[in-house]
Image (cartoon, rainbow, N blue to C red; front, side, top):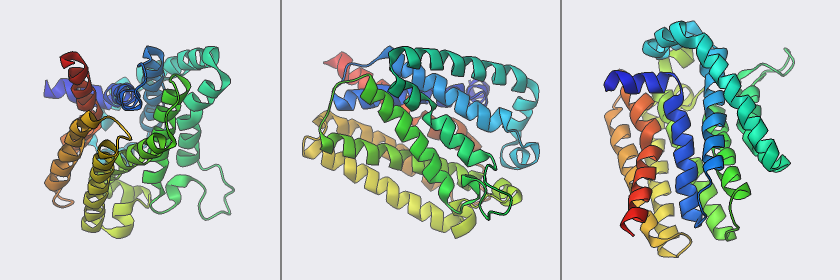
Amino acid sequence: MRGFLFSAAYSNLWIALSAGAQVYVNSWLLGHRVSATAMLLAVLGMFWVYTFAKAVHFDAQADAANDPGRTEFLKTHRKPLILAGISGLALGTVLAWQHSAMTLLVFWSPTFIGLLYDLRLAPATWRYRRLKDVPGLKGVSVASAWTLLILGLCSVYGAGASWATWSFLVSWNFLLWFINTTYFDLGDLAGDVLEGTRTLPVALGFQATRTILHLLNGVAALLLIGAAQYHIVQGSAVVLLVLNLVQWELLRRAKDENVDIGWECDVLFDGVFLLAAVLVWLIGWLG
């Protein structure tokens, strides 16, 4: 089972399924009927974006330092993964365009951010030629991509909601994914130093970054409690505090840069929204 889950993570299928689960959870928080097409678009969109970042834009030296298991997996399966990613992008583009131009823009938004993040598009004379080069901007870029795609799909495929509800969901989703991607940076510290990527752990140090993530996890938990308390979302949403508990435990395990957190990053941290979707489904099933 462990090997199967690692393969699902290395192929980007695990993180893609998490995107579909996140649409499911946020639709429930909004009180919307869940759209299967919106969930599929989230899966296809994030599968392509992570395939582009990990397989198309493959840096064997840095990847080997960060995650040798993923590097070996990609050496064997890189070409079929790229083909699957492009096919998913094409299918998603057709489905999104059939719905509306806004849906197409939402579906492509993580790809646009990914291109700005990964590729040196600015002139060679510029100090920062890509978002990846700006200290600490990786977490903001990734969290923004996730928030735009997930809540954008919930918006175009769902009914309206109050300003307070949307404000909470934007803040909550952004915080959760900022914590997620920066947690990965804790495990990727050696490779990021080698590549020259100025992530928060590189700029601030391992322990300072870990402390910041603990604080942000607490803020996300308080936002959820407040939203449920003041009926911005349904009271049963407090069950999602399990996400914060899981993240707290995973942060606790990452005691220093010498601890191997590959399993925690690739499977557990990226699987928290799959857990959340199961809990939401159980709430609905139990009535």
